[in-house]
Each structure stands twice: as structure tokens, then as C-alpha cells.
Image (cartoon, rainbow, N blue to C red; front, side, top):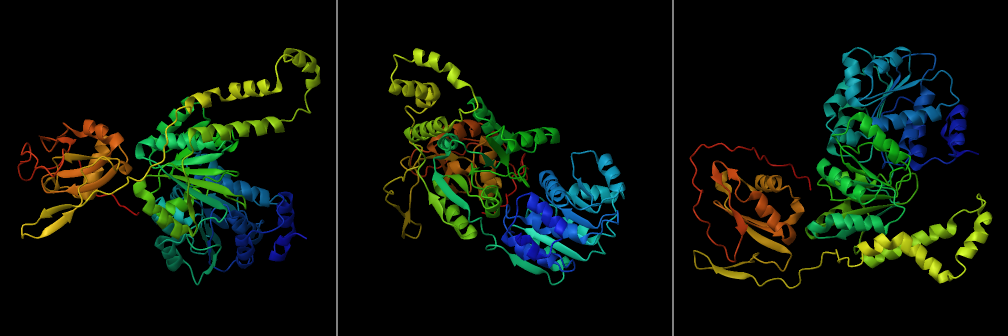
Length: 578
């Protein structure tokens, strides 16, 4: 007996999911379907991506609509084109034996005239992204007056992407609805506000703990110096042969740069970011879904709604600033009951974020050493040998060539053949990793003795000097301070924008009225000096150099400026959620 029958679904729907090989509902399906089949209950379902949420709302919708009425009765709103198409594809599978049921996906980047034509032909279920849906409403190309059921899928992601006003507009225009079904991986205050403002006594079901991660995911992290982040990434990829994964970066510049570097090194990888046209995006996703690409590297915005089966690894090239983003990233693997691995590359000063993430996803994060060059070669070697042993030779007429092969290798031992095969396959690995350095960030060792200084009142005060290199940082001086209109957040934005470096390279910052001292990773200090020293700021020359010990007073060069001078660039404070 198919366990879905006990949930109250039609035989036609049961048959369609049986054809797909599904016989047992997932927890969210088991709990949500009986509630949603009533059609009149507002519903909130909290569950991670990959837990079967599409079937949980898709099958009840198909059962509730009237196929004889050729107008929109159900509206599914989701954050991205990819998810929109995925939901529509799943609905097509679920309605295989239902006659007269039509669905339409409406999203940006495709012909709106074609979508309007399809809507006019008569559909019962519309799957839409917010922007294109609003466009259709304003063109009066879609009538929401008869919509009975509104589904908000991945509600937290839509709000993170700035669609709050669009969602409010849609809900205000579906005045005759019978119920709202909201599905989300997390429950931030914005999602709770929608529930409070538009839903009546909703039934709330949580699968797993709120804001928790998928229990099928193994969370691992590696601590590396900032300047070794790319090499660490490359080594982790090499140490996991057969990886099929997504790499997340904060910026599209990083995504493109890393993609180009890895491609030149022979990796099957492409970048997904906001500068791509829809046609380019579709091509990249098509190659990734077909596994023509081993790796996809993406920004968080570009990856919203990606739903691809079989992803084995997610790699955080950098930890996200928003801790909830981590849940969405890691949720791309470990789907549909499968296991997955989420790898994070951290700077030594980011380990506090790991503790925060552990609490949020209610899972232990395992700190692992970055593999050595020898470890990588060994792992690749045995992976290749396993593939060699498992190679299917039953379909070819290989016996025809055996006599010639035996003659050719008559004077070569079995051991020599294996060595030659290994050399042919792994020569590049062995050469690359022959003298590979240890990429693990090590403790700085003994802390320096606190510096004792005397205050104006004669009291003795301790202050730890950070003019040192033994902790991996170089102390720099810059003749900009609070008198220039800076405070810490805007100063950070200024120096990072000008140097094009990541904030992980920075250590302590001591900001004064006329100047500032800051710690910078040893490997990046000269790059920052070169980028900033000599720049013009508010009609004076910026000076940055390596401090020589103690807290020396800056020269008065260029410190005076006329009152009321405006700044050339507006370094407004960035919102920091972490």
C-alpha cells in the first residue's frame, strides 16, 4: 500500500507519484497535506529546502481546484525563475493523470506576450516570481479576483531579496482567497509579520527546529590565513574527487575571478552572478544540472532558489555576514534524505561566527586541518584506482586487442605498469603539490606582555601593544581619523573599497581624532599601502606607512582642512548583521 493514500489524496495523484517512485511521504508532507486538503485553513510550514515542500502544497492544490473553470484559482509565488520552473515541472509530474488541469509559469527574462497569451487560454494554477506577477497585474493580464489559494514558497528568501512590498500588494489584491499557505526555511520577524497581518489563526507546523539546519549535513570548517584562501579552496576541491558542488562568494567579482582561475587550471566550473543575461544564466544552469560542470560558483543573490538534486558539497569561500544566509547556502546539499557536506573557509578571527552558527543550526561544526599536498595526492591516487577497478569492460571487444597488449607489455612487470599508469594520470598533481606549504593558520604563540603607561592623573594603565609581526599582522599608520568625518564602520568601508581587500585581512584598529593605527595581514600589508598611500582625500594627500614601534605622533602634513569641506565619497555605515 502506498502511504500517501492515508493522507486523503485522489487515486489519480497517488498513481502519478507512484510512477515517480514515491511511496512514503516526508515529514512535512505527512503533516501538511491533511491540513491543506481542507482548503480553508491558513497554514505556516517551517522546513528546510529539500524536504519535499513542493509536493506538500502542490498535490493538495491539484486536488482542490476545479478543472472545469479555466481561470486562475491558485497562485504560487516564489523568489526566482529557477524555483518557478522547478515547481511548474513538479506540478506537471503530479497532474499526469488529471485531465483539464493547466499550469503556467510567469517570470522575468522571458517573453511576457507569450505568457499573457498562455494565461488567456485558461489556466487554473499560476506559478510566478513577484516582479513579473506585479507587471501582469498592472497590465490587467491576470485576474486575481477568483484566486482561492495563495502559496508563498521560500518566503524568507523573497523578503531577503526585497520583495516585501510586492508580497503585500499581491495579498491585498487576492481579496476572495480562502487560505494562504506560507512555506519558509526560517521564521524571521518579517515572515512573522505577514502571518500576523494577512492570516487568520494559521496552523503552524515545524519540521525540525526553527532556523535549524538539515540533520543530513556534515558541517566542517578550515582556518586559513586570508592570503591563502584561494589555495585552500583549490586544495579542498582536489581532496574531494567526484565533488559536485556549489561555491559561495560574497561578491560577483570574486565569483568571476575564482571561476576564471580554476577554469585555467582545468576545472569544470562556471560562475553565476548578477551580470549574466538570462540566456547566459540558463546556459550555465543547464550545464550544471546535466553535470557537464563539476562546480558552480555563485553569489547569494544569484543562487536564490537554485534547486538541483545530487549536490554533494557546498563550500563557503567566505562566511556570510548574515547568519541565516548560512542556512540557505548549506541547504543546497543533503536534500531528499541524502547526506551532504558543507565546508567553510575561515580566518582565525572568524571562529566566533562558527560558535554562533552552531547555536543557530543546532549542529556541531567540525574543525579539520587543511589537507597537505601529500594527502591530496594520496586521495586522488586511490580515487583513480577505485575507478580503474570498477571500470566496466563487458561492453567492448577488448579481447581482440589482448594479444597485442600482452606482446607490448611482455617485458614490463605488473608493478611497472601500475607505476606508469599512476605517473600518466598524476604527474601534474605530484609536481604541483611536491613542495606544497602548510596552509593551516597556526596560533601566534605567546601573547606579548601588556605595555604599561602612565595616565594624565598619574595612574598606571595597561595597554597591549599591537605593533608586532609575530601574530601574522603588520601595524600600519594612516593620517585619517575621526576629524575627517570617519567612524569605525565608514573607515573600514573606505580602506576596503580603496584597497579592494576583504575585511578578514584586518586585525585591531585604533582610531584617533587625527590618525589611525590598524593591523593588516602580513601578506597584504604592502598591497594596502600601495593602494592607499598617496591618494587624495578632501584635497589633501593620504599617507599610509608601516609603523615603527610605539604610538608615534603623525606629522601635521595635510591635517588641516577648511571647515565645511565636503567629502568626495559618501562612506555611509554598512549594516552588519553578524
